[in-house]
Image (cartoon, rainbow over all chains, first blue to last red; front, side, top):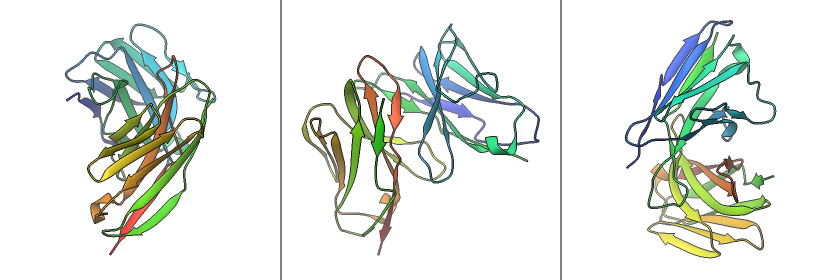
Length: 118
Length: 110
């Protein structure tokens, strides 16, 4: 089945630095990818929709200058958290629309990235 | 927009049956998903309903009533490994954004 690889799985960074998270579709082309953020014991909150070759669409309240999204190819989307602060510490998950016979809209999720800003 | 609500926590006994409810308010509804998520892991797909009625898949079944804006996930013969968070999620017609509910943390006890 469709696989989405997300890297790194865990990252610790100093406050004020930037962190890049990669999301790759391994065996299919993903024109659209989604980035979510999840705080402990909470649900997934959609941050932005990443479209290959065009600007990402951000959800209300998400700072586009802080969370930079690049979707330069059909298999790779990146999320860069710029000038990270402790409140940005969270679990970040990407997903891609994928071919899946079980569901008309196939969404395959990456394994997530645990970001800790110290 | 979509407001998707679920109970925050539920506890059930191994071997029992549990029903996790999900209510939603949406315009242009176009399908409802259920996912299972273990702590620190990605959600895994359980079911998708777009028409009213019950979809059964082994120990897991999902029900949808579009007129009532209501869905539930039914888990039978509960096992300890079923302890996880269960998320319902919906998409709006014409769009492709998946919006998640608040999530239900299920704890299965002996």
